[in-house]
Length: 285
Image (cartoon, rainbow, N blue to C red; front, side, top):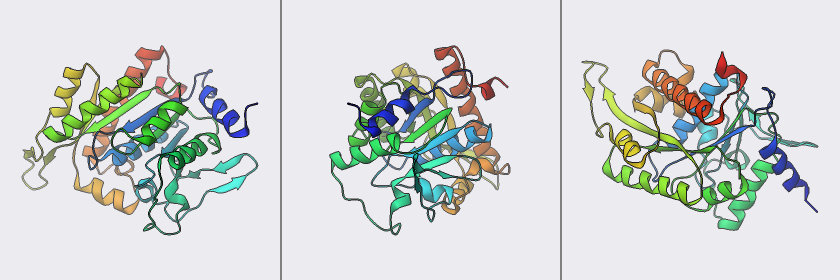
């Protein structure tokens, strides 16, 4: 007999959103190595979608480095339990968020868990959180090809794919190729590759400077035959926004960040429309 948690997980996977019977889109944000800005991309992309009036959930599956609460300024909030399950924290932009970081006594506490415990909490986040009727569930994975990514792929059989974040350096691109290989071994579609830290526009002379090279992510996408979703330049404002809990995409003054995530979002929408033959109602507006 199916237990309560398994039943709720099955309901989440099979549920239709309120937009003409379309299923919730599940997309995992991942990277081959750490330090490429994966959580920054996940946070800003999720907020950008919520700003378009989608019903969006953001699940922080990085158990050992849960940075999402800090980036959204909700690290001092705590989820509450109801008869329907755990209520995720809802931000001012309408984004629903769950993270192990929301349960820590202090942000300095370390999670020292092996694989089975991490699998269990990811299953709880999917099956015991009262997400409601979502258009999108964005899942921020830790870097690499370990337990958390395996758990998500195992639990969400209908996941729409993985969005891989890289930076232009050769070492990052080598690891991003491994992430693509990992996804393909799990028969997980690759939504595309995003190149972060792609060039820097000097605020004084306005000259474009390629601090960490540029274009490597796009080249890797061509070689691996996966879509290239777009590039994000180095924006000092994005760092300060993340540290202060105010995603850069919410501030129209951050033109480079807003433009980059708008492009990525548009490319992603077009790809989903081509693959599924239809999108939630807001995307057609």
